[in-house]
Image 1 (cartoon, rainbow, N blue to C red):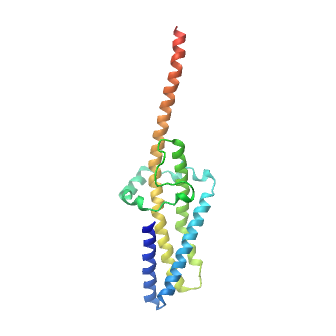
Image 2: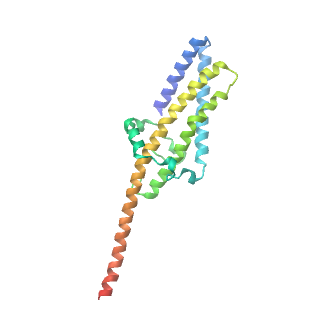
Image 3: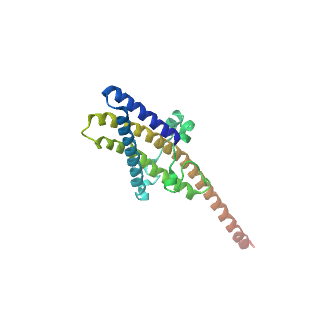
Amino acid sequence: MILYLLIIFVCSLGLSGAVAIWSGENFFLLFGLVALGVVFEIAVDGLTATIARLLPAKCADHTKKIFVVSAKEKKFYEKLKIRLWKDKIPEIGHFTGFRKNKLADPQSVEYVDRFLLESCYGEIGHFFSLFTGFTLLFLYPLSDIWFVLAIPVAIINLFLNLPSLLVLRYNSYKLEVLRKSLLKKQQRKAVQAQAVEIAPATAEKTE
């Protein structure tokens, strides 16, 4: 989270300075407008995530084609060296009561299913945030300077949401692999338990 805030602060300073030099406007006024834009983006992202989380669970079903990550897509994420930086992405699962930065119970199918559900909700929220951030352009639609400031802020918001979306999809591939493995274990245990129950009955008949 500190890294994200630092990126936002540095970008805000740079943007305000560049526009101040270009337009001749007061730097502090421009920085205040950029700060207002950042607050607006945070609010819009939060609202988008909240609306996404209110959707029925069937909309975030991990078996839907849109959420399925192929092996080819997973290799693309590996080429991006996602393992090296994914843990630096802020995780705000505590707001929904479910953290997605660590597997708390990797031996439970029910837990993995819940993890996948929350990941799909997260994907929906971050995906739409890529676009809803551009509503910032309509905050002060009559100001040319505002457009010069708002477009970069909206683009920065897009690039801050995109890594979170990629990490969620990368992790969901591994979760699906884990889920299949757990289901196979459950099936083997069920077959073994059934065999144990059948054995005494078979022995009684032979006697």
